[in-house]
Image (cartoon, rainbow, N blue to C red; front, side, top):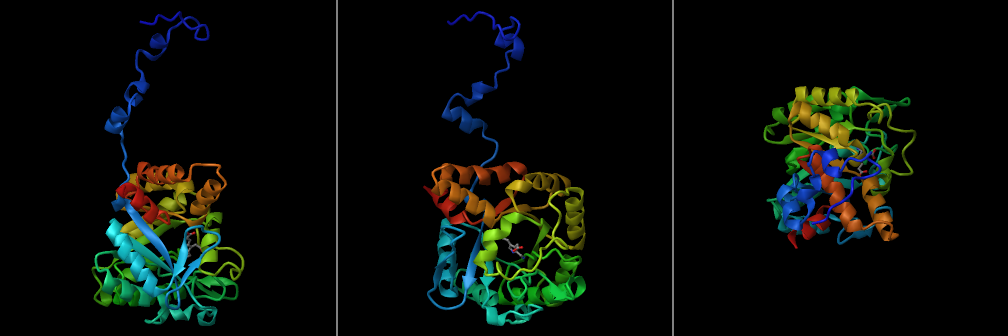
Length: 343
Ligand code: PBG
């Protein structure tokens, strides 16, 4: 038995006198005891995989700012969806890179039933009916200015945008989308989409509200991925939430729930875990976070430089979402994590 003399630094008290014999390291002493007391667990059921779509056949394009992520033509997106379903990933979310020629001031191509999103949904639904499909009813891939709304005299006009987004949601549902996830932050969009879906017989199509989407710098690589990087004039501060605000975020979520949101999402993810926590504890709705492109790329870049252990940082970041209260996480890491969890 070791017998230690009282510590000088503590004025003579022993550690047991200081802690009252409460030693939290006891349960950390071995792998078995750490496993026994582990409070949060990551499973494949927590993962939603966002994928990028591009026109053409048999196309797989690297996205330089997102190492390991590619744009896929519909035929290859179908194959990746099959692989994701085999890994047990419950759902994918699609984001299209629209040809410049199809873009205009109002993003009217979002109302084409045969646009890239809708073609992909149909093809994936047909080949892989067991995977959930989440589609983004937002104008930014379709506008020639990169904004999420119709732009008139320098202003993103709310109500007209909502009308168009709701119509687009109906087309996405008709193509087979299971969850409409509008990411544009226009006022009234959730209620308008719910009404439009119900009026067209899509009562079973759910809405995942990007309830709290912040005007963030972490979306950079995504804009590269969907080709809106050079297009965007100005910023999105008149419709996304100020990163400084928490009460406003709670009010946004409250409003979306009142309008009929089935699920809430927080975006970006890791810098906004306080928002996840407050939404989950306030509303008890299924709550998700989007670990966005910039968050993904930071981990990948640091790992590529040998500055962090990429695999551990990836798993730790995703577990942090669970701890904060997430029911699931949209993450570009989804297939990598699913494979690791399986092995
Ligand atoms: C816009 C939209 C954004 C993302 C998805 N849809 C943000 C933006 O470009 O302003 C970001 C996703 C990511 O960064 O991974 N409706």
